[in-house]
Length: 245
Image (cartoon, rainbow, N blue to C red):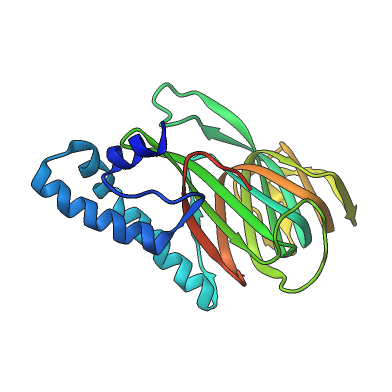
């Protein structure tokens, strides 16, 4: 859609590139008020999405001021996480079954459930695509060093504790493990002394004292933050269209 048509469709000017979340919220509130007068259903649908976006903005403020702690979860919407390097201690992994979509037909798929007792990340970028009233948007979160595929190991590092990731795929260009135990029963897998839940007795499990993964890319469905995470230089943006890190 050309920019002129897009501006008319949204009822608001659209700037090139990422729109800051705060500015996007203000513009959406203004267009939502206009919608009450004009009766435009697409704009009403977009206005209904504001509480969720506002909640994400609040989460971003909390993270920028310190640590987000205790059972933070993002579920049921596929998203991508990237980091130039992850160095973790107390690593554990197992196969986990997850119902597809709403699970109405009982269909399921296999997932990798991986946990870190502690982890240091060299940059973080995550994004998810979503359509609102037929218009594509990308919600993107970035912190620490710019993620460009090259581990730099410089400040600021991102530190996390008791971090669990559930994904259909986890890829890296290079990886190394130390003190690894393959084939442990999945119901008895631990990350540095803390049990990794979700395993079935007799199924395959893995433990390692330390793990390093370069150029990490994960197609994830769930992130469980049982402990805490610090995200320096946090940036949380909504961008028009479908973009990546």
